[in-house]
Image (cartoon, rainbow, N blue to C red; front, side, top):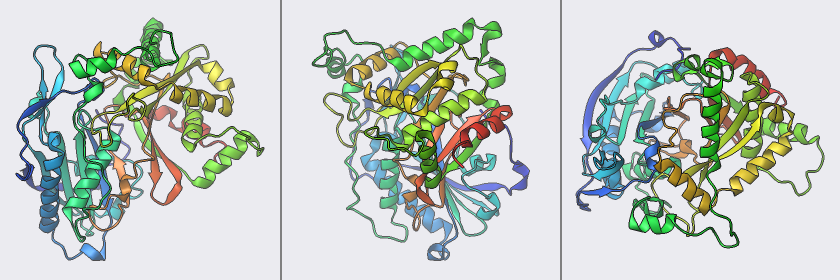
Amino acid sequence: MATKKHDDHENYPTVLVTKTVTVHPKPLLHHPQQILHLSNLDRQCPMLMYVVFFYKPCFAYQNLSLGSIFNSLKSGLEETLSIWYPAAGRLSLNQADGKLNLWCNNGGAVLAEAVTTAKIIQLGDLSQYKEFFERLAYKPVFQGNFSQMPLIVAQITRFGCGGYSISIGASHSLFDGPATYDFLRAWASNSAILKEKRSTLQIYEPVHERGPLLVGTQHGQQQLTKLPESGSSAPTRGAAAIDHLHQLIKQALAGPDMKFGGSNFSNTGNSNLVLKTFHLSGAMIESLKIKVFGGESRGSFSFSSFELIAAHLWKARTKALGVKKGAMVCLQFAVDLRNKMVPPLPKGFSGNAFVLASIALTAEQLEGSSHEAIIEKIKQAKNSITNDYVIAYNKALDGGAAQGSLPPINELTLVSDWTRMPFHTIDFLHGEAAYVSPLLSPIPQVAYFMQNPNDLRGIGVRIGLPPQFLNAFSHYFLTNLQ
């Protein structure tokens, strides 16, 4: 997949990879080869997800060679893989049921070293995605065989100005966002570049077994066939996110020429999306709160910045894309289920532990609803994520209801909240990163809510949009924010 080109690739010098090594766990802790059974949540998107850290030139490391930094990162990764040993494995296809599991075979991660004469200042605003960023990432050729694909790849690139980028790609079958954040914090701590190793870093010992999230195993089946939670005599309901997705697909297929939101399906594909980051300062978010509620006391009605911005984005995106008034539209957002399970998942759980919550209205209802009404529905959707919901969601995925390859649907707005994962604070080198940018993902239309390194009360919203709707979205989204 690729986005629509909105930066000239030829304006930047080449990136030359000078070294590539396979990194294995240190032999301090020997982990025998074994199969780690994955959950259906892990199997939704087995591809590599990339982020790139940018560190501007710094006096502290101007005299360090690229080789010494590379070796420190390599040593730190070896030590980290000794604890996070599944990350050194490979995915394995079970021939009996056709499902992916994780083969802990110590196959190793891949670490690359690269140089470029480009200067970081030439890249301009680092929060705005550029196709050049993809060249800062090591991307192994995938020929359809997951057993040959490393689960962790990284590339450190020295810029002509003395700054660095560090890109990391991690299989989404291995980690979700919080687990990736913990893995990278551990790696940075173990690398000890210009700092002492911080053995006191507060990271829980990782728990790699998927346990109660497994379908079809004895332990998992005991969890997934439980009676409804106490106080409820009704049978377990389906997962709203899966049900709503099925309805959206039926709605699209029932339309003339299989149209999605008035646009031909073939014309709304991933290859035509532009990635744009909108910066919402703390002052802008506060201004929206005042305008939405008229400056009056909200009484007992409390809400988070996430709920407010998600409601505002849903209204703006749906209006900008021109969805027909009678069409069903959905807002879906990821909810961490670690504390939603009964009992809760163990601290340090390293697998995928999120499900999608979902709200459905008609486009006309959405446009006519107040922000407060939509926020209330978002809160209700959050509260609906119970142990029963997780059971229903997991079982639905067992039947093949996955979103990993779902093309963009104008009627579906997807949000992923990264604001509790301040990736920019991870100091692989010296101090915080100037910025950490997600690269192009398999579902680029997702709106990522991220911390702003320069405004801790602000939120950066990175979203993929068809180029013909970008101006309209900018207008509707920034209304009441300025």
